[in-house]
Image 1 (tube, rainbow, N blue to C red):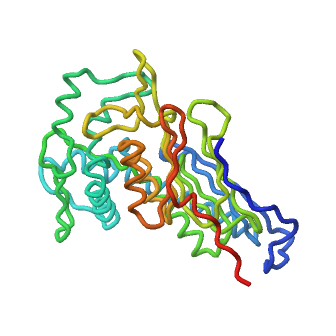
Image 2 (tube, rainbow, N blue to C red):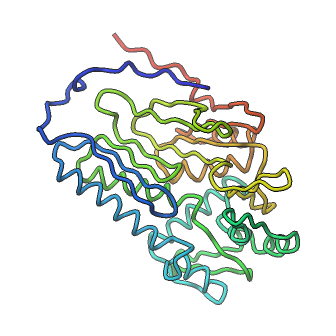
Image 3 (cartoon, one colour):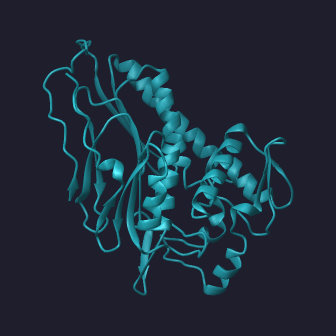
Length: 332
């Protein structure tokens, strides 16, 4: 296990924290949304206000699921996939912003991040252990390429220039949802919280005097941690080849797809990225997984305020230089 030094636990309220009302306390809520477990844990001085804040988080998660699910025929994403080859499709402001960010990550990564991978990705069914034939894979790959996705920023429309194209926002929609949820909690005056959507989390503040402790799962040993991180006010995303997969013919087929090959990368078991916002962490965790240890960490080092932990296929743990920096000394 690779561990970071944990802060010493305190007893009683943290310095500067006033005594709270009798009905104050920690609250939790979990729902299954967007095909994953959505969790929110927060502290509120008023139980009714806390319950209302958690409900607002879940409402936002449902809203994003309705707009961005590839499985709901009336979602905005489904409408794009259905109609964008026939002609320009109008975009909501939110979707236009996400497609612009997707293009930025595609350019930054040289195509390792590419939401048009879905032309291939939808051919896999991990529950049914289905993978495409070589012929089907070759056909689908001709529709993969972020430069075939044309967004008209002025008209606020999108169109596909290759038949068979489709997009999937699974590369960062959950991170976006967690960002939105954190913003909602901030507006409601919540200062201590943890919102998670599958492998994507945002911690707000601390746990009233001690950091949040987030464990990074060991990719091959169930119930064990590869690393334990004490965190405050940060977003964290983990992408692993153990989330949705099946093994066949000695190969692991998992949901993280290299857009250039249409196949699952094999050099990495998991990638964890830390940054200020969840959209960045989720997008870069997927990107580093595709790029591999050396190229992936080189990309991370080029991004201010971003760090990563990579578990390679041989079990070796690699981490970016920002996680090696000594803690600043207290000034006298």
